[in-house]
Length: 397
Image (cartoon, rainbow, N blue to C red; front, side):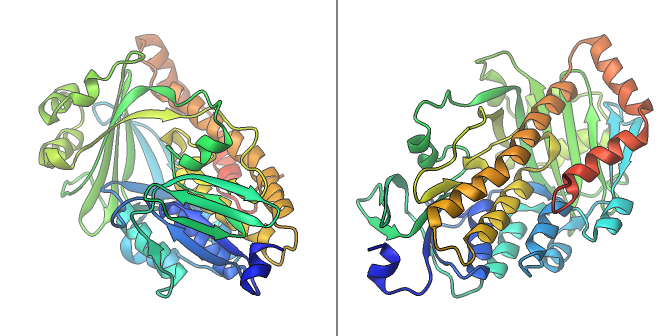
C-alpha cells in the first residue's frame, strides 16, 4: 500500500526540499497539476538574497502552458530589457544584441528582476494557502515502493509519495543520489554582486550591458524602481581565495579606468551589501533520481551565469515535471520521464554557459582582442539563431 493509499489522499503528495526559485516554481506548477505539495526550507526565514537575476522568455512561456502567467508581476516589480549591450572596459560599443523583435515574435519579454521580487511573484503563483516549513534542514531520504521519507537535522521526518530535491548548489539530496560526485568545478574567476539605488545618465530605462576587459567583466542592469544590479568578475588561479577577501576599495582598484558608470556603481554601493562568491558549476549528472525522488534546478544541473539561464531552466524543470506527473499512476516512471526529457537541453546549456564564460574571461591581449572582433563583426543571424534556440518554448527540435 502506497503512502497515498495509506493516507486516503485522492492526489499524490510531493515533498519539496528548498524554497528557492526552483522549489517555489515547482510548488506552483505541481499544484496546477493536481499534486499536493509540502515545502521545506533550511533557513530560519524565507530570504531571497540581495542580488538580481535575468528571467528570460522561455521561462514565462513554459509557465503559460500550465495557465500560470507571471509576466504581470514581473512587469510591476522588475524591468524589461529589449537588448543586451556589449562594451569595452572604457564603455565603447562592441555589439548590441536585440531581444525585442524575438520577444514580440515569441510572445514574452525578458526581465531583469531583484530576487526578492521574483520570489514574491512565484509566491503569488502558489497561493496564500500554501505554508512553507522553515528551519527544516534535510539530511537524507529513503525511497521505497510505497513512498518516500525525508529526515531532518532536528530529528523530524516527513513522508510523501514523491520527493523533489530543489535545495540548490549544495543540495543534501544530491549528495545521497551522487555520493561519488567530484564536487564543484571552478569557473576560474571570482564574482562580486550587488543591487543598489542608482542614478546615472548611462543607466536608461531597461539598460543592460556587459563590459569586457582582459580577465575581467562587469555587468550593469536596470531592475526597475530606481535600482541597478551589478556584478564584477576577475580571473583567479586555481585554489586562490584571496580575491574574495578583497574589500570595496580593492574592488574599485580592479576597475579603475573603466567606464564612469562602472566606477560609480561600485562607489555608491555600501560595502556590506556586496556579495562575494567563486564562480563554479558541477560535472553533469547522468542520473538525477532513484525510485520516487528526483532533482531539479541547481541541485540537478548548476551552471555558470554567462547565459543568464539558471532561473529559467529551474522553472522549465518545474513545468516539465508537472506535465509528467499530471494524472500519472506510475510515479517513478513519471519522474524518469521528466529526467529523460530535461537532460539533453540542460546538459547542452550547462556546456554552452561554460564555453561562453571561458571566452568572456579571456585574459591574453591577442585572445581578448580576437574575442571582441568576433563579437563585433560576426553575422547577426548567428546570434539571433542561438538566442532563438534558447528562448523558444517548447524547445526547437
